[in-house]
View 1 (tube, rainbow, N blue to C red):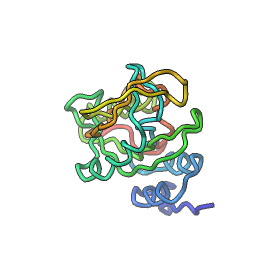
View 2: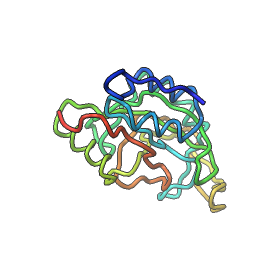
View 3: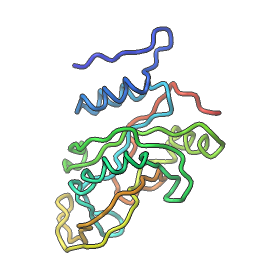
View 4: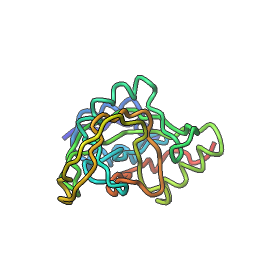
Length: 190
């Protein structure tokens, strides 16, 4: 059991401490509890899950996880719906078994900025549940055919995927790439 530290008097968890908790535990429940008390606009989301997406494609999670350090080096951009509108940043990541699919997934700890009205709009949509999850964006140069271990269906495997951004989306292409938790104490508007 990890001890969760909070700012005295505010009941919130500073982002640096939240990142530490996220990195030290594999418990989804502990992560959710910590995120809900984050002092900034933070949320935990499955960036991707090892399963066939709505386009009939699969990105192996091992390939996604290989790309995470590069993604963070590029400041972990989060876009609104795969546009050039950057509304947030990935702070940390981990490879875990997804609780629903029992396949591997990449969990992100992310934050939404509070600089403008679009940031506020996206944050409000995350809070309301209208914006349900995430979608990885990038490019692929090689694929093969394979089987989806979750559904058993044939799938086009993106063998050389390069992850350049993560989008906050209303309807994730990967059905279980959903938001797990968001800060319920962070300020909503600029």
